[in-house]
Amino acid sequence: MPENSGSTGRTPETHVIDFRAAEQLLAARDPRGAVKLLDEVVAAHPENTAARLLRARAFFAAAQLRPAELEFSVVLEREPDNAFAHFALARTYERLSRLDQAQRHFRLAAALDPKPEYLKAARFES
Image 1 (cartoon, rainbow, N blue to C red):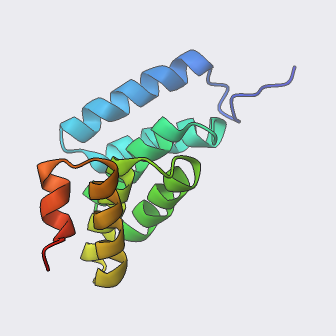
Image 2: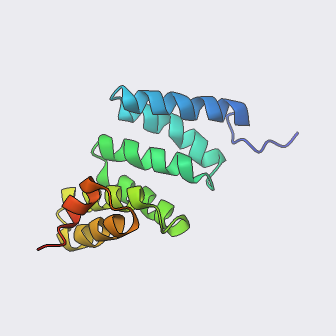
Image 3: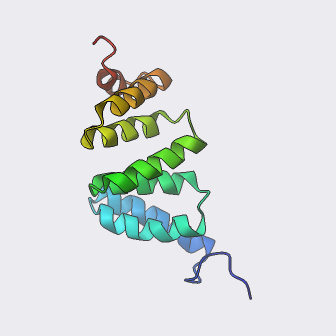
C-alpha cells in the first residue's frame, strides 16, 4: 500500500497538527523543537510555502542562519512579493554580516509593504 506522507506513516492531518504545534513551540521560544516538527512536514509537503516560511523563522530564531537563508530564499522564489520573507532574509543577511544583500532585501520589503519597521530598516534617506 503506497504512502504519500513520508516514511513515518503520518497523515496529512497529523502534518497540520505538527504545523500548529510548531507555531506554538516557536511562540514559546523553542525554535529547535519547531524545526524538528517542521522537518517532517516539509519532507512530506515540500511545496508548502507556509511550512517553509515557519521553518525559516524557526531556523532564524535558533541562530541557524544558513538553513534560514536557504528556506527564506525558497519562499521568495515562490512568492517574490512576500514582504515579510524579504525582511526576514534581510535580517538573516544582517546577522551574517552580508550588509549589501541585507540592504537590498530591506528595501524590497519596504517597497512591497511600507510598514514603519520595514521603512526604518530600509534607510532610504541614507
